[in-house]
Length: 189
Image 1 (cartoon, rainbow, N blue to C red):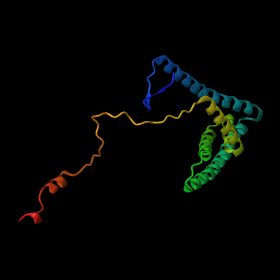
Image 2: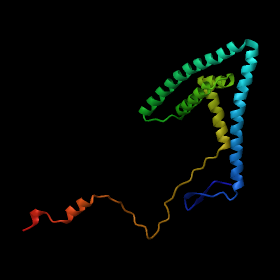
Image 3: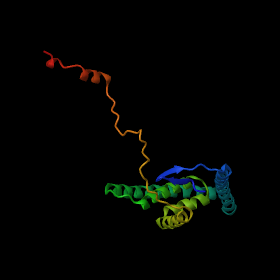
Image 4: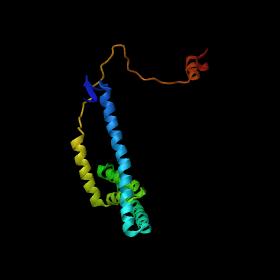
């Protein structure tokens, strides 16, 4: 069922007739988020344990810290480069969506690099590499095009009520109105 209906050229919200449908959608989204927030740290923990069994705890933790430091440096460098490009394009009066998406991906990468673990560091570092970022961007664009539909609706004028009067409201000080009502002393005989 569509969430939007068109009537008389206006977009109006249609209420859901079946509340169970909306509840099921929200439950599915919540379930996916819970899985992500449980499985990703769990996978990072398992990778850290496996890595530490081969190299020892000190080396594993050192690698996580080193990847965080390298990632923070690369994120800062990438952020300043993208920010400079965004600023220069805005000064020229242009809006580049690729630069905005690059900035969002770099911001997301910085968040992943703050999370300790090999899996999140790997994904975060790969988001900082421009070639990998282009690959992710192509995959996300393909996914959005397949899963979301865009519709353009022309907006007409609202139906006019015969009792409606168009006008402007001016707010004046009452003392100013009283002064204008009183005759000026120059005009008095």
